Image 1 (spheres, one colour):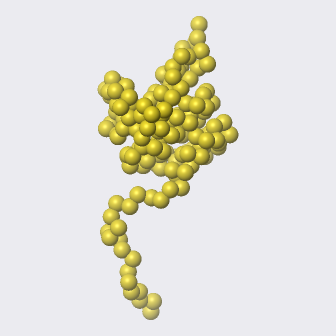
Image 2 (cartoon, rainbow, N blue to C red):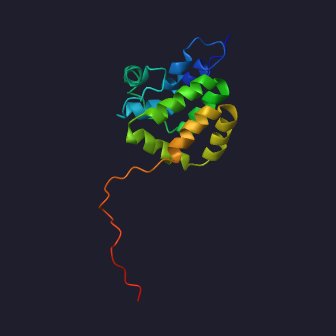
Image 3 (cartoon, rainbow, N blue to C red):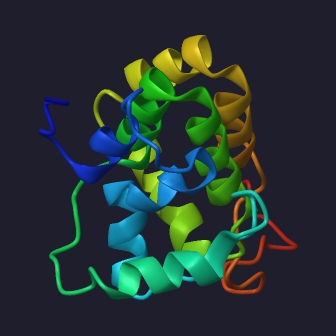
Length: 157
């Protein structure tokens, strides 16, 4: 018996699993939840197979409720089980052109236990952590440059 309990990603990440490592990120609940609610396709970091496969796989599970799981929780689980899968997931996150997924990463980075999870990722899969960290320190997305312009004059009196 393999002891098949847990979410599909945990089962696929087991040593006895034959699931392809470069596609394992498709089973991450945080990625599926994003895709299921209309998020964009991937950027191609998953071995050149990116968004088209993601949309096809997730289309079958779009009737499920979105998962409240954090991207960092899934990344931490993946790197504990399979480093290559964690790097593929991080590449998919960083390589996406979707501002919604990047916003989810930014939101998840401010949640409780994220520092612990990201530290665990740095220890287990440094390349995956560096890729996601690069996204976190990148320039923010500006929606409207002129919405709150800096005043050209100031009254200091």
